[in-house]
Length: 585
Image (cartoon, rainbow, N blue to C red; front, top):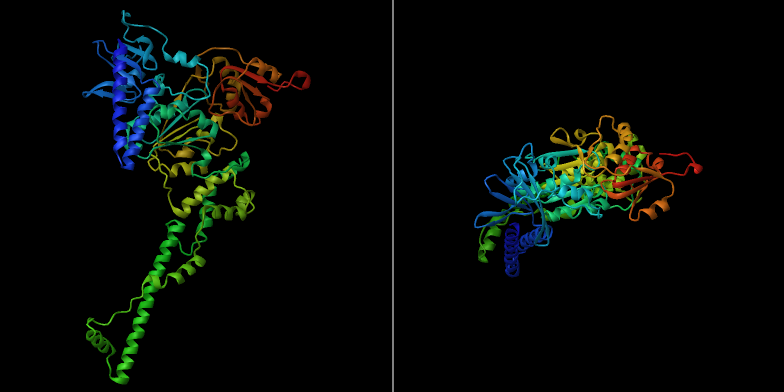
């Protein structure tokens, strides 16, 4: 019974796509063409990733199909966008609280064909001949092998996740929880929901901030699969648009990430201003130059006029000739008429002099000059940051340069309707300042776990990063890691975050074990991910993980906690054999 309606949905989608193609071919307007291309991309994404995936049925026999976008025919909904209020019961209804539903149906498509369905009876009624009881897509998703790319979870969002996604709060939303609780999934789906529910946010697009390029590649397909293509993905170092290829050692990153650097940069810039003011340095310089040019032109004009008047008076006294009247008569005889011209010295007449003077008195500065100037001769409390002029920039310098740019030229031009900050516990205070400058509305989804913070972080709480204007949610169910792997990390979690509860896993599996021969373990588990102290793979997950030398990784216990919680199926910890030294688990 589902196939005819699903076929009708695809046919309607095909017609919309054809209409867009026809309009694209005939539209010369660049903005209109850009809009049409975005709509075409949305339709293509919807058609390619399972256009329809669910249905909700009521006891009276009526129902709604739920999918990646809405489709209407004759004003009636053929398919309801998953973000629409009418779709909320698909995610939130339970047997205890059925929300008026009789049944929730999950559909799995193979191209345009309904390949399978599974039903959940929610109102306690007996299954009927059209019901197909089954486990649903969550169990399938939990046990599916990882592909190296995060998939969207629009078909499997759980009630606690969906409640956060659909929160009506327009400001900053913080999502915290242990490893594998779905924080990233919630953040990306929350961004898609915000753009749907609050059109003003969609006008400026989405910025996604992640810990590193590999993480961004891992999540890069989720928002496009949800129909959102106006998305910029950057690492936390690149928020301001700069790039540096040299990583900063953790201690340097921590020192340069402190908010005290913002004050030091402001002091350095203000010390070079000839006059105080609230206008950004370079803008104030232009204002000062224009004011100076106008003032000098006025004074020269007044002085010249006074000189000419004195000459006129002296000439009249000596010769009895009124020069103004004589000039006027000459002009009249030539047919020009009118009074003699007044002195007209404009600003252009003083431009070269003023430009040269301002260049000496109030030189234009670049962000690089400001940061280099401060670090070449830092104040005593920042002496450890001394940097030789011309030294290569590191990643930790980029937030300082962005801060300097705001002092020189004011707020950035790249402002976003919504910002997602993932692995947010990694950001320093200076990183946060760069992020917040780009979101005046504070429409943000911030996800993280301070138990997983790296050694370079300078922020210890969400209040320190965001002030008190945010709403916080905690996810408690683990969808990644087996109960056995979580239990293996329990003692470490208690040590690094004494007040944090272990999340509840939905799955059981193999017990983690200790191995001694990395090559042997790799041969037995081809495709396993090897994790070392150089890269603990924050934010990512793998079926099988080999954690090499936990003692070395454990120099930062939070890094070890991250490493131990990346596996979805199997965890093997590689330590030196007993003969080579003490077991360092």
